[in-house]
Length: 48
Length: 485
Image (cartoon, rainbow over all chains, first blue to last red; front, side, top):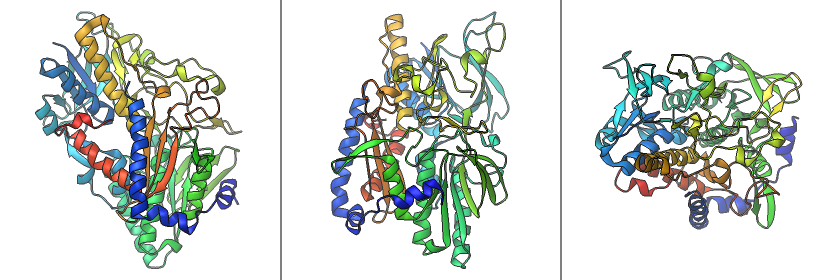
């Protein structure tokens, strides 16, 4: 097995709960707002 | 009245043109020279490449926008810059050859007071024999390429539906490529499509990259905090590859491609080949074929351009080991030192060094992801050049120049991992700064508070929203300038 494939095989696998949260419309609506806030923070920093 | 000529109508050039007309008004002249008649929102080509969008959704004609905004649009290819004019007339000018069907092949001289080089890259498929749409692999660099990729993918899916296993190779086609993020996006979008088609078990999807490790993305990887731990984009990306069952080959330089086989060398010097049924490999970039001449007609291209064809600006290009490079080596105003009325922005400027550590194989092959400078940084640079040129026109030598070094610039990136309003997914990332600064941030080179990554449906919504927002902005609809770069 290639070293990268070995690293992939050893990487943490998300639980069913995490996978479900990643696709949940309710949870993701909150994440949508939170990620946008993080991005706006970067945009504000970039206003030279 | 001043005349500003912009070479290129992509993200950097088009952004500069729109801001210049807004900042200068119509008393000055803005000319855009671009060989293409269409504007393309390139980040969405990924979705064209899997058949989720068509070319009309990611492109629009530039001419009506430029007519409305009073911008002089020349559909032409710039071939030479004469920054000192001629011995008889010292007015600087560029030579162009029209690609406009009504003037095809005609040449002209366009004089300028200020010049913005925003030509973007030359897609250097020729660097790897057999690479590209004229060879044996597909690309998603242009909307047209993406359509061809989509058609080939559809054929591969049809074969799988008939029970034929398919090997799909997606990645970059040379050791010095950039845009690994786009290859990553395409790999996961293809995986998503194959799964949606119900044939995932028949697809062996392999990501082939020049990144030394997964999650590098050409920026040396990211470190961010997640649930109380500092984690790396390497671990985070590997986890996604495991979850989606995609194999990966890292630290690879593609030597050549033959029909159905890609031959590559890895950082350890080993050489191998991989048979494929469908492959999308991005090409390396180099500067466009643009020459420069002094007033006597002597070729001064080496003075203006780095060996890779990108334009040298106010960066420190002194050759030194990777460990000695510093954040302050990166350009701040993107002005050409010897000709301060010339700016080079977006992909067109020559980065002083790689962000991701370059490596050389025992055979002497350079495997070094080139610095990404597309998207958000390109737009910021375009606006910066417009702002500084406006200041120079209005205030002359007293103008206060603004700066936007990539070592003092953040970026927000959304890498699609599958399209769909309910079942889509994307990796949303922010980083600050793009170029690590080991003095300000000694631990990781970047602000851990502002460097962030998350995977989920929300990322897909953001990418979809950005698609519509940036096309709205590029069409210069009301309030366009309120949308940040």
